[in-house]
Length: 615
Image 1 (cartoon, helix red, strand yellow):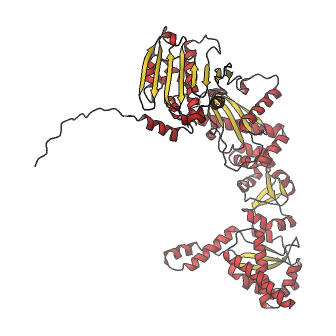
Image 2 (tube, helix red, strand yellow):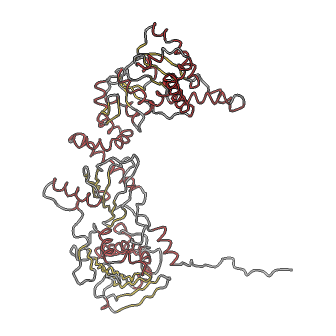
Image 3 (cartoon, one colour):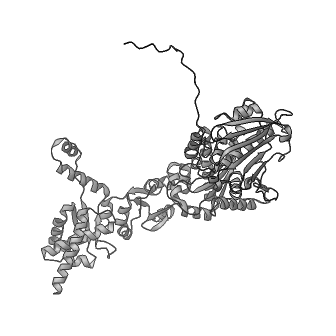
């Protein structure tokens, strides 16, 4: 059986994509736009771009002669502009072809940077709240151009017809939406007014709103941006900018930094947060592009270390993404980020040089942010390191004050190590800084770059024990039996026991044990358990003499003096375990299961001994 030959078609057949408009609108609503409210932003944006094109045709027209009018009465939403308008061919090309933008037309291609939108899909956002879009437009490019009506429907169909010029006496465009019943949340007059102010408060063209109650239109943007206004004095300007920052960001700024980057047409303010924020937590910034609000969460405009400010800016040359809700990452944005970072550094430098009170309040709230910056910025390091607060054996103080008292600064590698030795090191006259917090150890080690007369070293257990006074020989011999029993009891923890005298006398014991030593002992223990085989050979090759922990008993403490005189072996063992457990708890490091068990057992044994003695 033979099959018939298939028809020959070596070149194939050209076909066009079929677009399901309802599916596309659903895609936009769930994956491109964050909320249906963006429909009004898109309509405002189209109107602004049309006005920009109209001004390029009539550059001599007085400022404010062309504007945007909004109308919402609950039954319709209407946006009317005095822009460049559309011809019938424009309507077919730009309203009925998804993905093509009038901003890419040849006649305005050279002015592309003057427009906000660049993607040609904004009008589709109206289908998020309406099933039909009605557009009436008249072109300003063609004298005596007729008016054109376009009706687009959510099922993908549309109609176009030409109207008499009297249907729209002046050039421009009117877009009318009849909201769906389920879109009332976004199309009520009060909501349209709020959205207009939200998105368009800094637009450079006049925008008015009419709610259909018979009154005159109310200005949405009655004043220019606060940084574009004239003020009688620098102080008045500073107060006005701070008040604006508080109004739009919701907090009273510690200070306000004015931002101005003429190369990209960026102006705005950075408001310093009055309270600390978690390290690395990046706040969103309000970014406007040519006056239109792009995003309230644009964290990409500043570097990660600048989480102590929130910005409100308006820029000319930054590119929005397709959704126009964030910024496109390109070389321009990277350059803007670097330039704004330099403005923040300059503000810190001015505060350090001329306003110590402001600097102190800033560092009190944001020392962690400054520390993260100082690690990578030598200029900030030299300027602010002496003023940064650290936790030390002298309390919370600046490195400058601490270094005046201690020519040699010791720094711990962890918080638990600092807490373990702080009281005893302080009593011994040692100057120790807690290096366990983020950036602190690295920064303290750079202190000699600022103060060459100060030396910095990591705290070594031997350094601390060398400052503890030995007991006399007679006392040592008298306590020998107790110390031997204590070493035997604590051998399971690789812990030696010694008797010394140190302040404060209220501390019965000190457990000297670094994190590195514990890790080494754990590795050695694992090697012993894995004797033989490839894994055992690898661990054996890495094995070295594991450093032992040391429990140092304080002869000045009355409890210790009583304990070392105990003759009963079991009671001596139990008391040594209790002293170890108490010292381990005071170190505030995580306890191993065996240590937790020891603490519970020694407490119960001592309690039982006390009860037997009473009976």
